[in-house]
Amino acid sequence: MIFNKDTAKKTAEVLLQVNAIKLSPKEPFTWASGWSSPIYCDNRIVLSFPLIRNYICETMAKQIEKQYGKPDVIAGVATGAIGIGMLVANYMGLPFIYVRPDAKGHGRKNQIEGFIESGQNVVVVEDLISTGKSSLNAVKALKEANINVKGMIAIFTYGFEVATENFNKEAINLQTLSNYESLLEQALDTDYISEKELQTLSEWNSDPAKWNAN
Ligand SMILES: O=P(O)(O)OC[C@H]1O[C@H](OP(=O)(O)OP(=O)(O)O)[C@H](O)[C@@H]1O
Ligand SMILES: O=C(O)c1cc(=O)[nH]c(=O)[nH]1
Image (cartoon, rainbow, N blue to C red; front, side, top):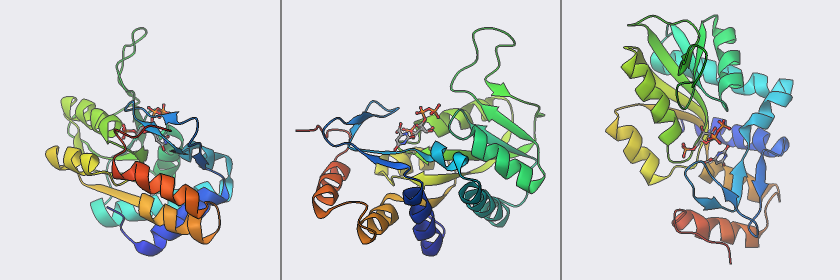
């Protein structure tokens, strides 16, 4: 799913540089999927660092154009990818919309926010893929509104089989700047994690749905 090993390494390097990677094996994080995890990759932090967000934005924009051509609109998955998606759209000179997990219960009751017309082409921007459920939920909403989803791009994926299966099932192409393997390699090389932490992270990664902290 990563498109280039050098980009995967460089992206892992910048994520580590801004401390986006949090480890807490004793008090695990709860993920959107309900899984417990000793690691949390908080890509939202990238937005607070102009040079780093520019790197992510330019790399995503260039890859979108290469892989999918220029779409009519960029769509961000709320809330994590609203910021980076908007930067990408701006860089490419394109309109931007974002997709909520559900329709709002009040106001205009929109799930898709912004202006888009039936039949337009979009590329969906996501900050992170674990199971892919949130991203594919956004794709479903777009398809139901007769929007043509050309594909998706995300900063990071854990590379879980379940995500690959979910994307294949929906026939959605996913490109990511980096992945778990590149992150662990870079984290070990730079002493961000110890050999012991690497062992915990590898054990967790072999069966994340069932992992529990001891
Ligand atoms: O691939 P998945 O298993 O769906 O998990 C990944 C999703 O989890 C995070 O969102 P979260 O639900 O934490 O909300 P946020 O974007 O509003 O922070 C992240 O931004 C992804 O959208
Ligand atoms: O699956 C999630 O909820 C999730 C995992 C992670 O590492 N980072 C994040 O923002 N969300």
